[in-house]
Amino acid sequence: MKTFRTIIVEDERLPRLSLLQKLKTYHPNIEVVDCCETYEAALTAILRHRPDILFLDIQLQGHTTLELLRELKEAIPLPHIIFTTAYSNSEYLLQAIRFAAADYLLKPVDVSDLAKAIRRIEERDATPPSSAPQPQAESGKFSFRTLNGTLYAGKDEVVYVRASGNYSHIILTEGEEIVLERLGIIESKLDERHFIRAGRTLLLNRNLIYKVDRKHKCCILRTPAGREYSVELSTGGLEAVEKL
Figure: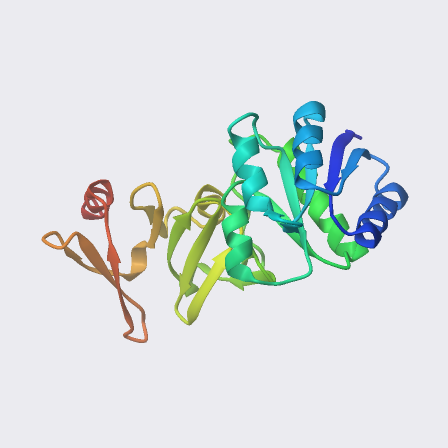
């Protein structure tokens, strides 16, 4: 089993000790090389140890994780990151997640949630970028990781998907969800016979494309229920759609 060198950045003593104990008890392959309470100590330790995984408290005294990540990104490739937070402010979390493919845990950290987060990193670390597409579940639904759990949706329920850095917006026939997955991962799950890559940041359901407006660089998607969605297209996306 591969060992992952890890740093915990947490300015509160009890959550820091609790996480440290859970890692030691349940995850012997996670080697904690340092624990940091402050922004300055974290920056120094991360640059020195170059860990494989960071457990980062979203809010540090006088600083935020965003500041720390900005500074680190200029100096080193970012490691795997798991954010820890006492809050579920989705917009703030999404700002942080833009910096790296990441998971997040609500404090106090649940043992099963911790295991799932570590398992995702182990799988991501072991899987090459060109891995084969995920097979469709027998139920006809695909699973997508969201801020608050898991979204299950079939290909006919997905109207289009737009990437936003390390996460994506999935527009459904009923509603919209933010998914903590890159567009390439989502594309590998959805059948290419039913979805078209319309530019760098957009996937469209082929079966729902109703009309293309070249003048305004957009296309209209229409659901079986008659609901219409207007989607802006790049020049490359427009050309891809017109080849259908």
